[in-house]
Length: 484
Image 1 (tube, rainbow, N blue to C red):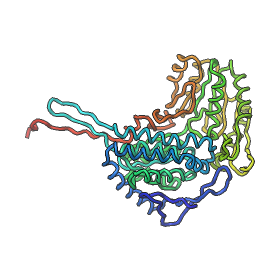
Image 2 (cartoon, one colour):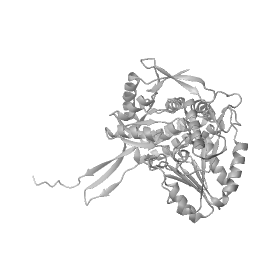
Image 3 (cartoon, helix red, strand yellow):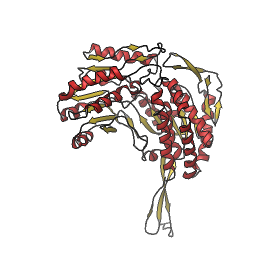
Image 4 (cartoon, helix red, strand yellow):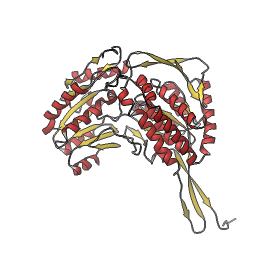
C-alpha cells in the first residue's frame, strides 16, 4: 500500500513520486509506503486550507457542532478498525488502542463540538457609546503530531481548531501517518467542507515548512524539547502563536500511608503502559523509606507475573514493541548507563523476542533501585519502559528533589492524608498533577507543562481562547467630537 497526502478532500499524488517506508514495530517488517509532501502538495495544501477556512469560518457554531458530532459517531463506530491501524503503526497492544486511542480522540472532538456553540464576546456601555468584542478564528492552523498516540493527538489538535472555525494542515509523525488520513476521510464523510482538514506527510523538512509559512497563523506541536525549541524559533519569524506539549521526567511520590496496591499499580501504569512511550510518565518513583521494602517486593512480583509481552494484536498482550529499532537501541543504551552508574537492576534490562514476533523492537519492563538524583537515568527522559525508584525521608525533602528538574509536565502523589496531598501538589512545579491516580486526561481537563515541558494547553475550555483572537468594536452613538 502507498499512503498519499490528503488534500482538498481526497488523496493527492505528489509530483516527484518520492516515498518513505513505515515499519511495523512488532515485526520489523515493512507495513506500507508513504508519499512525501513535495512543493506541489504544499502549495495545494495552503490553497485548499484558505478556501476551506472561508467556508468553515462563515458557518455558525451550531452548524459546526452538528458536523463534528457526526464525525464523532463515525469514529466510535469504527473504533476497532482504527485501533488496529494504530497498533500496526505504533506497536502498542490492541487492548490499549481499542479503549484509549480512538475513544479519547472522539471524546475531545465531542467536547469541543459542544463548545463551538458557546463561543462569545462581551459588551460594555461607555455612557452612550459602547463597545463589544468578538472571538474570531485565527485562520490556517498547523498541527504537528507525535508517534506515540497518533490518532488521539490528531483529534486533540483538530478538535479546538475546527470547533473555533479554523482550518488545519496536520503533519503526523512520519513513523505513524495512517490514522491522520483516516481522520481526514471521516471528517469529509461527516460533512466537514473540503480543505478544512488537510494532511501532509514527511519528516523535519515538512514540519519546518509549516512552522515558517507566513500564511499559517498558529502551530500546535507535540514532541521532544529540542524540536520544540526549533518550532518556536521558526514560528517567531512571523509571530505565530504556538502551543507545545513537550517532554517530561515526572515524579511519582508515594508516602508511607498510601494504599500499597494502588501505589504499585500507579508505578506500573506510569512506566510500562504503552511500553513507557508516554510523555507524562512518572519515571522517577519516590517511595518513603518506611514502606520501601514492601513496595519493592510487590512491584517486582507484579511486574514479572502480570506483564505479557507479545504480538500486539493478541488481545491478551498488555505490553508491546517500541516504535523503532533506533529507539530500542536508545533505550537499551540508557539501561546500560544505569548499570554503569551504579543503579541496581531489579528486573528486566534486556531485549525480548516474544513468540511469533521475534524480530520486533521489544525491551523488557525494567526497574532500577538504589538510584540517586544525579544518575543519567533519573535526569534524562528515556521514553521507554525504564523505572527509577528512589527513597525519601520527609515531605520537604521530596518536594525539593521532585522539582529539581528542567521539566515540569506532570506529577503524582499517593497518600491517604488529604491535607498533605493538596499541600504537596500545590508545590509541584508541573502542569498536570494527580492525587491517588495517574495518567488520566479527560477532555475537560487542560493538559500542558511548566518549564521546558511546554507552552499553552490542550483540552479544557480555555483552549478555545488559544484558537481564537479578540476583535474589539467601538460603536459611536453620539455626534463625534473633534477639534478640527
